[in-house]
Length: 345
Ligand code: HEM
Image (cartoon, rainbow, N blue to C red; front, side):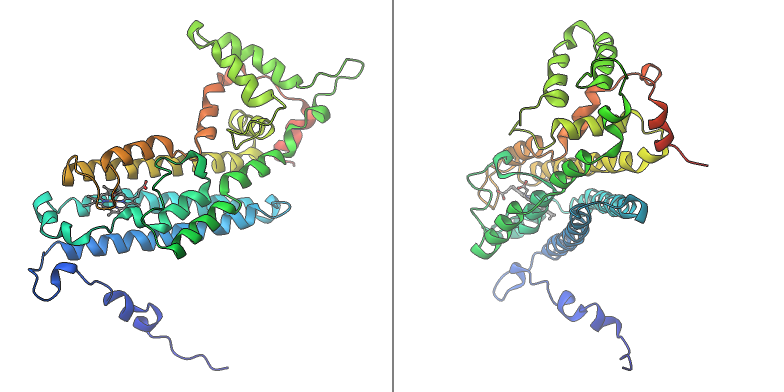
């Protein structure tokens, strides 16, 4: 079949996008507020980027949801690459606040009242993104109204996203499958009674010796996070997954652990960038409307502050950094394990 020539404007559907700004204040009988055009375009730009971030996130969840992530076929590389793209987009989203801040509070007041009750609160893509990354309903700030301003069709989309596998859930499964940390295979000492966690028992001793008096409670946390068998409903990462994640962080110098480390680091970076955006958004809100309530009906900056503190989705990964030890004190690993994690010539 002969291919039709592609036309720039048609391909990009520019007639829809360029015609999609309809400022309320430009309507007949009203006094046009100059900055409303900027206000609309910046929100549209954000929503387009949210769409792209969701597209990347969904694809990564699909790859990680396969029965076995084939690291040799480049699956993990694709995952890391796409998530790094997400962090790059998020950085742009943080920067974009600069543009909106060229609008003064008085410029905003020229049209703010015409927007009620519309608000970024109604950004269903943002809520779906939080859910797909792994924010559970139980951990949401402002549960009683986070979907109160939305249409039923959008609530359904969010509920659907909340019921699907999440990125952090997939990460948990992938970490649990990590082949390198089978202690019964690599730490078997013939003739000796088997210990449940020979590597971690040795590690815990070194870690304990590195703690200050006021940090001794960390030993109890260590047991809870890494060694307990009981399922902890409060946590998404299982002890087995946490052991794998900490192992990756500790021994990331081995080539086989390089990409896994980048994956963990990128997820922490996604949280950081989301938090930076939330922080800048709050400052902008305070600057624009001070302590007034939002057009979406929340307490405004107070609500946003609560969400910022609570919505760290990959907190369980960054918290593992409390359990690192000095590189020089790392236990040496069995040779048959290091042979597998290094380059083979
Ligand atoms: C003049 C600028 C802005 C002001 C004063 C403002 C104000 C607010 C306020 C007060 C809220 C809390 C909900 C409410 O009661 O309305 C909110 C939520 C939100 N806004 Fe904005 N906003 C501004 C710009 C933006 C921009 C450019 C975006 C980009 C998409 C955005 C996205 C959001 C999102 C996603 C939420 C929900 C956050 C969450 O639930 O954690 N806002 N905004």
